[in-house]
Image 1 (cartoon, one colour):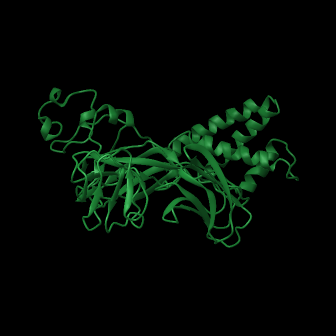
Image 2 (cartoon, helix red, strand yellow; image 1 turned 180 degrees about the horizontal axis):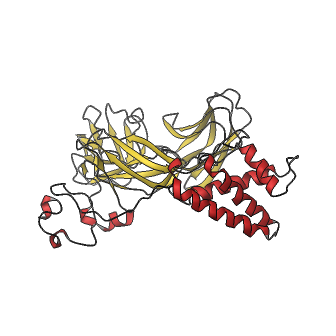
Image 3 (tube, one colour; image 1 turned 120 degrees about the vertical axis):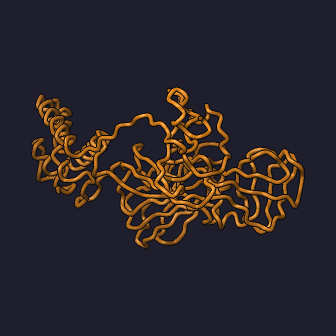
Length: 406
């Protein structure tokens, strides 16, 4: 398999570029990476299959039971709680014994206190009960593409979860505070953040390597309600704090390749906001977000089987993830682009050769996945049935669909 340096040399040779110098290396390197991304999107390549999992977080009721809420106020407190230690995220839903309404957590201001997104409408109390409902949103592994599926064993057998769009879910008017075994998932949101600050906070950065002292970490987000950014210089393994207080984060990038892994935290290191990998294998780690329904009633593993987005090549000895069979396609596409760039008619020939090579790769390296609307098995139980838009189960006979629809 050809390394990054090998690919650059071969592309320069076929494009009749200066093979002895390095003046075209940056241009050719960028072409290789853009071509990698292009080819990675062309099909469901088997070489990009990956398997991972995440663990659900269920209800939280830690504390002595002395819960204070005040009618008309957004503040609440729980004696004996450990919100920061237990990584309670903002956005989780919370219920109190003196109100029939479900609220949402806006901030966590200490181990025992937080605020709600709206004022409390129930009865004022200093001794009511509370429950933070199970966590709804989870991060997929880094570089997950949109092609994936989720499943779990909570029923005692492998159960494939159904994907629905956020629009469909909201149109159906479903109770998003319902707790049970997750059967649906949505995907709304993608960013470079593992978890948002639980309250407005300065950011801190550090590396796992003492040699990282010249690079800069730039953080983009919201400060005092407006878009803003801040650059913080690394100082090896020592923690360096910024000066701006961010209420939310959009992106985190580094100025150059690093020897160590970069960790960005907030709220006195209580929240790990982002982790940037060793080196510079991607322009930015992106995490897709999954929202589960119903909210998970127990701690369980959700398995993720997916196709990943390719990492870009940086160092001369890097090799791409598609496999050696794809070397020729990458070379042909890059040479074709270079020929077009120089207004050479030969560009058409190389693009034609690339197209033919891609067809050959698709015959042997692609997963064929067809998506069909499926009916529920008899007695299987409710899942996405409330969103069914086509045939009704009653049109097919009583043996189809969940028992409640018979």
